[in-house]
Image (spheres, rainbow, N blue to C red):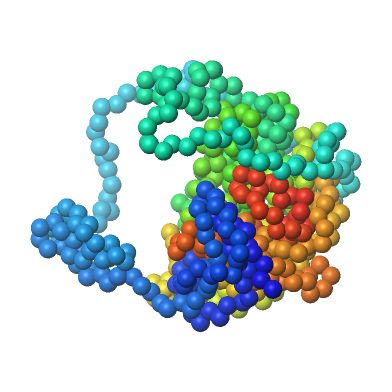
Length: 562
């Protein structure tokens, strides 16, 4: 029996495994689609309009327009071929100059003297020197490895709990604004200033957290900044230039990673200042990587849920001022995530929208890699869910991901990197120019002839029981309030999509990767490094209230879709 898949862009329908005769080139993980399926009896209208589940069809190959290749046009500044790479793109002449490139005959090899321009000697003094940075060496240089002591305090921070969960309410009765004529509907408070907005009345900003929600959210963000600062520095300190070279990365790439660590120093200082004197210091960590390739794979996941964790709560903050500065830091982290994907040989951004996740999800992923924290470190109120392991998680280091064996991960934590296969199976050193679609060395981008995942793929799971000690000093405990798992929730882009879970044994089961697009005829929902959860219900949720799924989550994992 088919069950409906509720998505944020509408409704998709669960499907049996489709027959995919050929996979598309590139990491857009969905085949071409035919007409919308009528398998669902529900239609939901959301900000992303109405959509229904498409029916997978066999991929028929490229539909790109032909390219004449000369680029010189007709001599009058008009494009010679208006089809180019985009079907149906016509009547788009552009005033391109009719110019032939100059033949390359000289390449500079001697540099200098510097250009002579007027300048004066300057130095950073006074207010221009900025506020002091927070030292990462609060208790001395950090160490690494598993925690071997005994926890003296356990459990998440809590006090008087008023209810078992947050109830559901109808839409905000004051949320009624709708503009039907494109004109201003209310008087302007000042010239060139439309009415409305928050924090726009001229009040002096206060860049401090304003509630327990703010405090716990920004504290979680600071825990994230500290581990990023440490892992970036740790790789540069422990791996040699030869180690980086073996992974296809050179001195300038090492310098980039060093600079990203400096960015984290600034982020940690910012968040500490917005928290005040109880802001937690840097902790010690237990990393899963033993070589550079594993390091970049781990960090494309670490920065993924670090970024997504912020998108999930930023617009719920009571302090708009804190949200403003946090957005300016997380935009940098988004660039870091893209860079680590490129260093891992993955497509840098194979989605239309980035995913937001609840704080407890981000804390579940993060806590597994924190070994210990100094005595007196501020603790968190967020939940730690049991781990959901993807048994047949695709190995990004294989030129044929469908040949991935079970558990090709370096350990059993949810975001630990893929193992490196035998050279005959590895895509790391494949020349992508000679063999397009099969190389996965560091690059601006790659298209994969065989994608990491596809609609209809059987995905097998194993999940932990609650009650495991995790996090700093093993002082937090995994827990769940959900009933028996019935669904797999796929959190990606603007969508939350459910597929039925088939139980095959104790804490074991499978489902099929769903088909579906964010908007009709557009980007497939399931792609990128994304998130999966086992749930006991398929309740309808959207990006702004996704945290309401938490009481129904049995286990939580990361899915390497693309």
